[in-house]
Image (cartoon, rainbow, N blue to C red; front, side):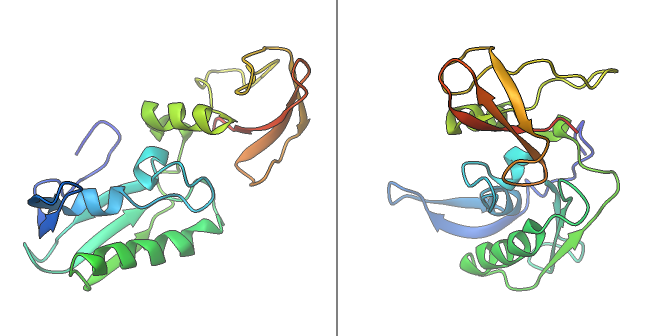
Length: 181
């Protein structure tokens, strides 16, 4: 178990695969699940987002695979798509006995997002969540397009419920902000 409460199947392998250079190698169960993209922000994987909680083989190597995911918020519509994408990813490496378990506890937090994921958000034009603190007050965000701090919130809800809509007063570009939860 790691510091975020994740239990990974990083030592369990699904078998041989070909890498981008035509070399055979081993692929872990965790790597298969971790590569699944988030359907709402496809530049992120479910591992980057912190939605992937664990990948286990409770019946032993080669047996049933259990993948546990946590939604970014209760009722997140992306969970059905993520479940289907996980099943497809495991089927592609010959593993069809896969259960995807949705857990709401502990509740997802933006603290679970990887630093690489936050950098990907910024590169994609979405302001990543900041550090959480005792006061949830955001006076300004730095624009991911031009870097200006002269921004304002247009709407508490953006393209999805976990994002808010902001606009930059300097470059006049709108942008999403991933809310710190």
